[in-house]
Length: 224
Image (cartoon, rainbow, N blue to C red; front, side, top):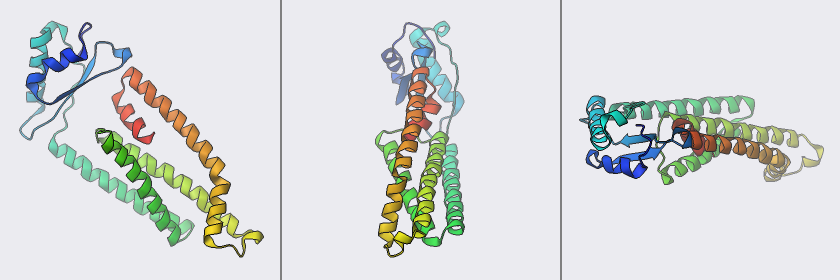
């Protein structure tokens, strides 16, 4: 909706009759514009929900002062389908990663890379739950991005381990000593690549927050 002299509290008060409505501003670039999210019941349809929200806004601010810029509807059936497809996509990605690392290195490397992936994804999902972020197709895209990014870092270390194992000075070293040296050798690279990626994503998240691109902000924040 778009009005020029209305605060976010005014919009929330206008939607008291609608139920559990969440209202957010869309950033300074969209002054007077708001994003409204309403929980969907099994009996709701997009037409009935749109009418309920619009009637409440028209009653509070006048029909001529409200402009609906976009309306989306995600029902329970679509949410269940999204969740199912997301699990399938992640499962396929993990199986392909297992096959790739096994062929390039060995089975023990593949298993350890999956453990590292589970750790990184679990940390990301924990942040999403703690911050109560919306789980959507954008969130799943962020999860898949993290899987790819984490795997890339893991492969770099595996490559270094293979090189260190061939060094004459490391012939009598234990597996732990070889792994430790490999991680230390790649630490500078890991810090630099992570820092540059973090800086880019932080800027992206900040810009999205300013101009009000909610979908990109939902993608950037979990990756941060």
